[in-house]
Image (cartoon, rainbow, N blue to C red; front, side):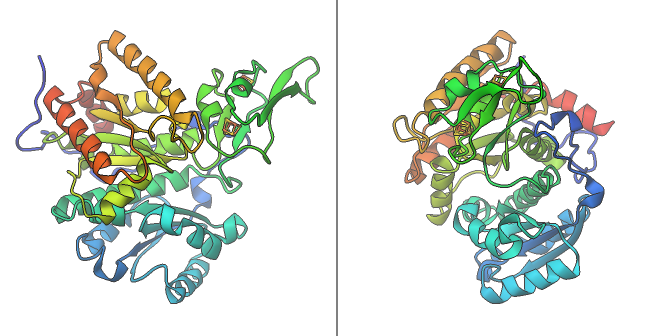
Length: 402
Ligand code: SF4
Ligand code: SF4
C-alpha cells in the first residue's frame, strides 16, 4: 500500500534533531589523507548581507542551532562579510581562536568563494580550509515567503558545510582526480573515460609487473567523470571526495528534516556551471520554491556516483533529482551524456530492486534557465508527493534513534 505524507508532519518519537552527522572511515577513498576531529577547530560566520539575508532568515536561531556541532569553536553573525573591513576582522578572529576550518554562510560560492579562499586561507597555504553555504540565493531569496522553513533549511545547509569540512583533509586542494595506487588494478577504464587524456596507464614504480593509472595534474580539469567510472573505487576527487559528499548526505538526513513526514525530502545534485548557476539566478529573480529540498554541488554531473544516490535513498531521502546542463552545452563537453546513461541504468537497477524509479529523475537546466530550474524542482517535488514517503525512511529513523 502506498504511504501518504502525514498531516501533522511529526513522527511519534522525535530524536535529537541536532544529532551529530556520522562519518564512516570506510568512506575515505583519498589515499594517505586522514581527517581527525581532535585536530579541527571550525568557525562559522553568518552574513546578514545588509538585511538581504537577515530580513528573511533568523540568523540567531541558526547560530544557536549549529553552535553545538562537533568541532565548532566559534559562531558569529557579521554584516557584509565580503567587505574589506569584515575580512580583516574575520582574519584576526580566526587567528585568535586558532581556527583551521571556516564555514561562510552567505552568498553563492560562485560569487565569492575565490575571494574568501584567497583572503582567509591564502588559497589553502595557511592551514585554513574554507567552505561556503549558499544561504542567500539558494535559501533566503528562493524561500522568501516562508522564513521559518527557510531558517530551518539554512541550519541544515550550515550543518552540511560543517560535515563536509570535517571530512576534508588539510592536504586537499583544487579539484583534481587522485589515484589510490594500492587499490588501482590498471584496468584503464578511467583513461578511456577522460575526454582530455589526462590519465595514462603506467608501470607501478613500487611493484614490478603491476600497472596503475597516473593522473597528469597539469591537464586534469577536475570534471570527476573518471572517479565515478572506476570499478575498483581507486579514484577520488579533491574537494568533492566520496567521503565529503557522503558526509553531506548524512548531515542532510539528520534531525528534523528526515523526521518531518508532512512533505517529501528531496536531494538535488546540481552541477557548478549549469543548474547550480540557474539556481543562483532563480534566487536573484526571487522565484519561489518549496523549501523541502537540499542541494549538493559538484563541478560536473558526471562526478555523481551511483553510491551517493543509493546512500541518499538508504538514509530515507524520498527523491533524488540530478540536474546537468542541456546536451551539447556541458562545460566538460560530454559529462552530461555520461550522466544521462548512468542515471538511466541506475533507474533500471532501482526498479529491479522494487523501488519506484520515478524517485530518481534527470532534468536538463542551463545556467540562464532560472524558470526551467524552478519548474524542474517544483514538478519533481509534486511527483514525489504523489508517490509518497520512501519506504526506507522508517528504517533510517529507527537507526538514528538507537
Ligand atoms: S579505472 Fe580505477 S582501477 Fe582501473 S586503471 Fe583507472 S583508477 Fe585504476
Ligand atoms: S577528473 Fe576529468 S579531466 Fe581529470 S582525469 Fe578525471 S576524467 Fe580526466
